Amino acid sequence: MSALYRQARPATFEEMVGQEHVKEVLTNALRQGRLAQAYLFSGPRGVGKTSSARLIAQAVHCQQEARPCGACEGCRLVREGRHPDVLEIDAASNNSVEDVRELRERILLSPILGPRKVVILDEAHMLSKSAFNALLKTLEEPPPHVIFIFATTEPERMPPTILSRTQHFRFRRLSEEEITEKLKRILAGLGRKAEPAALALVARLADGAMRDAESLLDRLLALEGPLTLQKTENALGLPPQEALFALAEALDQGQLRIALTQAQQLYTQGFAARTLAQGLLEALRAGLYARMGLGLGPHLQAPEERLLAAMTALDEALERLAKRSDALSLELALLGAYQALHPSAPAPAPPPSLQLPAFDPHPRKPEVRKPVDEAPTPAAVTHLAATWRQVMSALKPTVRAFVREAEPRLEEDRVVLLFPERAGFHYQRAQQHLEEIQKAVHEVLGLAQVELKLEGKKN
Image (tube, rainbow, N blue to C red; front, side, top):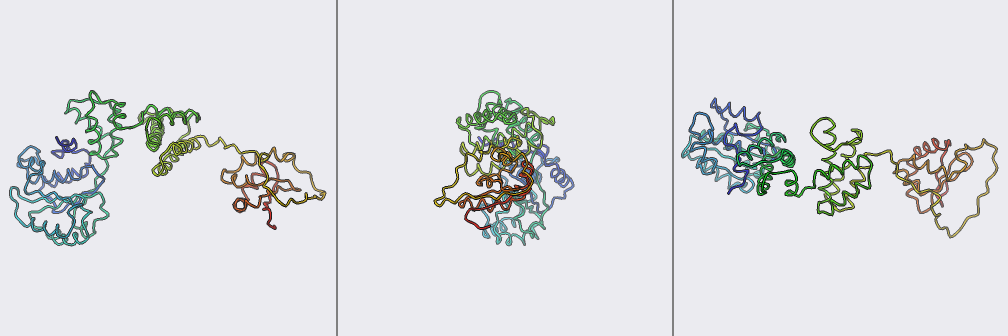
């Protein structure tokens, strides 16, 4: 028994799903007898390029007035791949100059059964440059009884000399609604039933390709009884949608511990880290769209801009998970989404009083400060160690990482950050962000001057 996607191929243009801009032009050309001698069908995989080429071949050899009828002897032979005047060639494996020369010899012969020969070149971009050059003259002045149809997913790889001699039709991805309706018709013809949520999941996974959707449905038809969402998820190895929605709601409500626990449970059940991150991204998307009245999703309360930031963080994490997909990488992806949803929760910084000074084998004598007759320092800096934590919280995390290596001191009317000799890199990076540091010190301590010093370096 053949695959479902082969059984479900359209027999007429009316059965073809989507691509209305293509069907209208081709049906009018057939009705008026104005078929071109060369076509180029381009677009994503599984959207109907080769099926449309076969429909043209059926129409050319159809024996009925309404062409193609899909039922006559000519249409049946084309659909079964047995018509002697229809040549369907895989250009990926027949892409040499010798193959093109053989093709030119075959098309010079007159048609056997029908009025014209139809040559369908699938994956046409795979032809070599020499093969294209060998075909160019034939395509420019083809025999009157030949129609060329090129099908490709990469039209940009087609030579301009070929493109200029064809009528180019661009096929688009199919919508989820169009795919769902076709799947419903297939199930109705087979006497099977399915939940709308299950068909919607298949349509979403197909990513606009009808052939992919039909292949997924073919796998699900091995299950007994109606196709439910749970059966579909289990058969396709996907995490439960309900669990992903709960995970998204936990992150949205700031319940980080619960979210990490739920993610760990799903990971231990065998779901890949990248699959879980992708599912969480789709759950946040569904929650955002549900708020706008577009479908169902988890109940999320975060502002739209934070939801978008969390989705962006997960999308970036998917690139890293493609290289390393383990439990730790999954936790980092969740933490990134959590931070995007709750940016007001600052990362706790360790108090400077807990930092141990660097060991100095040559201790220096304590510096004797000279009395100054200046205005007293603000009251906020009376206990610098107690207030310095507020300064650290006011800094960006990246700047805070550099300043954390320094020991803050109050000298006269300025704050001095003393970096140990081993922290030369942090000292240099802190110099680049001196204005940000001065701004934070002024906001918290009321002092406008900040000086950076590196031990062992003469300033």
